[in-house]
Image 1: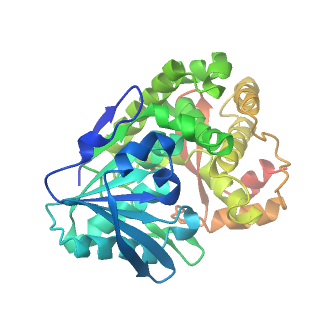
Image 2: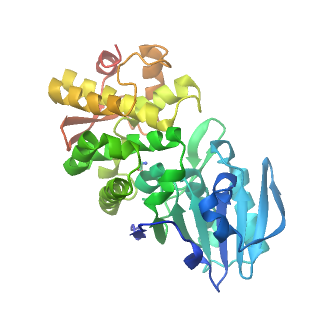
Image 3: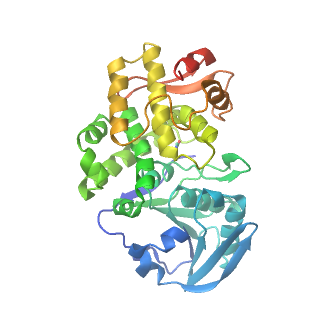
Length: 361
Ligand code: GLY
C-alpha cells in the first residue's frame, strides 16, 4: 500500500463550500466543530433529517441534496465501534457506493473514525479530511492510520487507509482552547527534534508568535510539519522502520498518560515529558551531550511543559516501567525506544529495564 494523499495547506479563513458536491458525499463532524462560528455558513447548507442510534452513540443526521452530514458527540469517549457503525448507518441511509466520498471535518478522533468507517464500508470507499486541530494537521491526519478504541485499549481496532485528500487550514488552530493548542505543540517539538533544524530554531526563537498563534508563524510551522511527516510516511507507511521514529517520547509518554488515568493529562503534556525522558536516557547512555538534553528541556519548559522526571502525575519508576513493557510497539522482551545523538540524529533501539529505570529517577 502506498501513501497517496494529496495535501493542500490553505491560508486564510476556512471556507469549506467547495467541498459540497453534486455527487453523493457523507460529511462527518462532531458537536464542537458543528458549533464553530467560522463554519456556521457552511453547516447552514444542511437541514435536519433524523437521529441515528448506535449502541452508546446518539448522532444527528442532516442532508443537503446529495450530501449528508452526521454530527457525533465530541471526545475520545466516543471513539468507539458504536460510532464507526453510526457512520456506516448514515452511509447506508444515503445509499453511498464505494465510489462515493466520506469527508471528515475535525480533529484526530473524527478523522480516525471516519477513515476507519470508510475503509470497511463495502470493503473500502473514499475518504478526505479537513483537519481542524494542530495535532491533526501536524500528525494524526497524515499517514493513513485509522481506528477506534476498545475497552481500555487506544486505537486497538483499525486499518491503514490513507485519505485521498487532506485540506489543512492553519487558521483553524485559532479556535482551539489553549490546552488543546499546547497539547498539539508537543508533536511539533517532536517533529522539529527528529527532522527539522529550521523548525526547532523557529520554536526556540519565536515563542511569543507561536503562543499568540501569529498567522504567518503558524502557517510556516504547520507547513514544515506536514512536509516532514509526509516524507516519513511515504518511505514507510506501515511502520516497519523509519515511521517508528515518530514515537519519540511516546513510550515514556503513553506510560505516564495511562498511569495518570486516561484523560487526566493531555497527550501533548505526556509526549513532551516523555521526550525529555528519552533524551535524559540518551545522555546517560553517552549518546548525546548533556547540553543538548538541557537545550531541549529549556524549549519544552518555555511552552509550559513539565520537563523534570518528578511529574505531578508520576506514580513511581517501577510502575511506569511496567506500563512501558506492555506497549503494543515492543517486539521483544526489551523496550523499544527512540533515542538521539543530537538534533535530527535519531536512533531506534531496544533497551534493558535497568537502563530505562536510570532515566526515571
Ligand atoms: N502518530 C504517529 C504516526 O502517525 O505514526
